[in-house]
Image 1 (cartoon, one colour):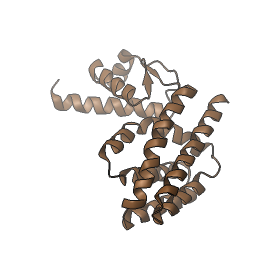
Image 2 (cartoon, rainbow, N blue to C red):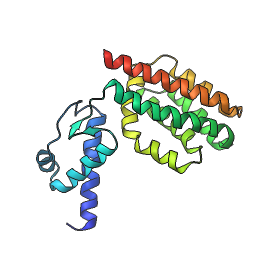
Image 3 (tube, rainbow, N blue to C red):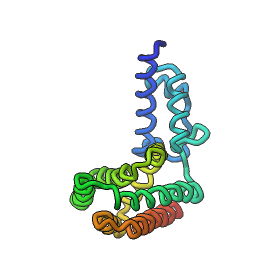
Length: 205
């Protein structure tokens, strides 16, 4: 198989498996069988194998099964986010320009007014704009590689309506707009800790 057809088959396979996990069609604990997926998609096992390997790196698959995260797994993921996104919020209070600040405010407005899917997208963009404003490529790359697993936790807090979620976004925005790095970092950390506690509570149920 030449490089271009393989790349197309790989991207198709990766997106197919990822989307099935993220929308719940492959529930937690589902075993992924390479032969079956290859037959279903009409590709060889090689792009399937590479797709599964990438999804393992992103934290959605463990030992060829859809992740069924433990409380420790969830806590570890959030610890990374709390450190990096907290610092990003501090940096954003210094570096974020007026145009990006306006986008940040729009995210809050859209999240308050839209359906769940719109809120999900606005929530994701809100956090991404802040991380991008850190001006730190290494931090941006780490968070980018975590996006798939972050999506699952974001889905939990949005669909099950975590209280004060958007009010907390407003507070973070206000601190960044006021160039108050200390407050922006503290509020972001508190925000993500509240997400963590909500996800752990949901896991217990």
